[in-house]
Length: 497
Ligand code: FAD
Ligand code: NAI
Image 1 (cartoon, rainbow, N blue to C red):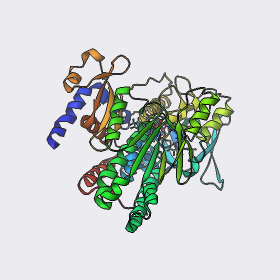
Image 2 (image 1 turned 180 degrees about the vertical axis):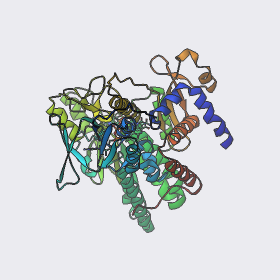
Image 3 (image 1 turned 90 degrees about the horizontal axis):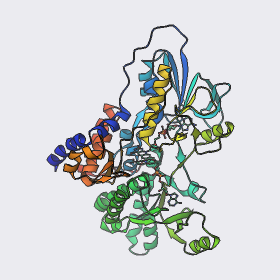
Image 4 (image 1 turned 180 degrees about the horizontal axis):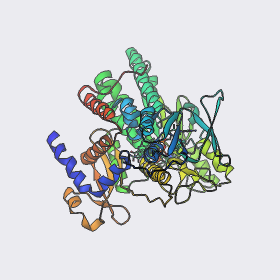
């Protein structure tokens, strides 16, 4: 097995050719930049955020003529692709986060200055060119002026106003969401194990505690469901026994007729089959309409422009079920700061900030929006955010704007241990891909311009890619150690204290 993997990973790398290079380039290191000489006043750059977009902008705009201030309530960079696996203890959060101060310090060595301000930006005054931020809810205000502003505040979970989600749902967006979920899962397992001492007396409560709903069959919901299923089958079975492990019920609910909208339908089907084979109950064409602390209500999805009769019928078929935990992974929406600025600028769409092709916010001077918070016509992914960050960082560094061009390298989705799906863009078009043919990777996508890889090779691709692109050697050591630990001794089942 180990030998087969050793051969497989480079083979896939070679086969992917440009795709591999393109994906890995979304996260390369600092530029070697030699500034032009001159004693002009440094330009003040304020970057809002500490995620994929902000970090890449910081790396590129760090140059001697710049005074950079990074503002974010989050003191770390979060490597989001690893988040789902941290929530079941496959890896530790140490591997998925990087302290921001270390990154800013690195930028400081290249710029006039670089500072991190841990604060929440609350308002942007585009005429006065200043940002108002607070350090906490008591409202101690900071005022930061800028020459150029990069808004890279990302997005937040979207509850679509569905009753009970904000109060009772858990999320999978930030590091603390993962800690909370890990803690809830382990605490429910302990309660269920304690109640089982009484035999069948508390059977109903045990079943409730062991039922997990994941809402949203996008990549987040699918990756999380696969991790949960692995955890249930391996570690829970080993530690809590088959009685508890077999009673765990994982339900994945998706409102659309199929899972994984961004992927080709054939790959989505592979993912669905894999989840079902691991015992996940996949309910497509089903909408969650109400959430309480201990139960969730679902009903058949409604078509667009449903008639009152159709609505009535769906309601009549609604079902309320008890659960011990519900994770809301049903999509993302704009943050309050973004909505506030969009409104001030008279923009009609509140889902993000409208930008021009250079990623400048329409109706402003010197303000850029990148990543999930920008309405740039590209999907809200790390790949897009990182490329936009680099583009804007370079534009600011060089003082020259240019049209942003996105290079899509492909999409990967991890389906737990030893499984995954990948849809890779093939360099040179579909005719020139003999290596992919040798690998037996079928053509997918609109004109068959992409190749699909599934199972162990996709998993190997996912792991090797995301391992290589971690930001620091210490994270790589930590992640490698986590994977080895989980493989030999099992996942971390220490309830966070
Ligand atoms: P973020 O990375 O979310 O960063 C936003 C930053 O802004 C944060 O630091 C936040 O604290 C800060 N902030 C928020 N509010 C304020 C404020 N008021 N003032 C200042 N700062 C603020 N994409 C992929 O391409 N591949 C993947 O495998 C992948 N896996 C994912 C897995 C999960 C579980 C999730 C949730 C997402 C995943 N994504 C993936 C999507 C990807 O993570 C996002 O598209 C990406 O994080 C967007 O980058 P961003 O910089 O715009 O936002
Ligand atoms: P998403 O928006 O991609 O998926 C959310 C899903 O929830 C949709 O399929 C939607 O139809 C469904 N939904 C909405 N309301 C619902 C309801 N009431 N009941 C049931 N289902 C409902 O969100 P996700 O998965 O969080 O991804 C966000 C972004 O991050 C995407 O751009 C995605 O591509 C990216 N991402 C990429 C990953 C990867 O490449 N491996 C992993 C995770 C996220």
